[in-house]
Length: 197
Image (cartoon, rainbow, N blue to C red; front, side):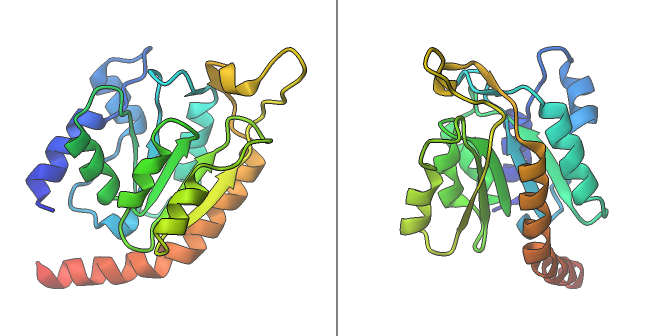
C-alpha cells in the first residue's frame, strides 16, 4: 500500500454530509492522516445510496472521537456511494476497525488489516449479523454487532426504513472494548513507523 494510492482512495471515499460542502464536511468528520498506520485507523461507513442512513451520525462520530481521543488514533468517515471498488478496498485495508450498517458494505470487512474489527450495526435487532459469515471464512477478524434503536412491529419492518438510529449505549460499550483490544497493536505500529522514518 503506497501513501499516494491510499490518499487517492481516501479522497474518493470521504463522506460528504448533504448539509455540508466537501470542505466543511472534511473538517467536521474527516481528520485523515495518511501517515497513520492501519492499526490506528477507525473507519465509519455511511451509505445514503443504500437507504440505510445512520440518523444519529453526529453522535456516532462524536462518541468515536471521545473514546479514541488520543492523537495517535485516526478516525475517518467514508461513503462507498460511487467510488471505485479499488478505492473501497484501499480505504478498508488501511483500517483496523470498520463500522457499517448491515447491507451497506459490511462484507468489505474481509479486507481489514490483520486482527481487524468489523462492527456491524444491525438494521433490526432480530436479524442475523451478516458479518458473522465473513468471520467464518476470515478467522483473523473479530465480528461484533451493535443494536439499532429501531423496534419492528406488525406494520413496519426496520429493514425498509431509510434511516436508523444507533443504540449509543451498545455502540459505546463495543467501541470501548475494541480500543482495549487494539491499543497495544497501535502503539507497536507507531513505534515501527517512527523507526522507519
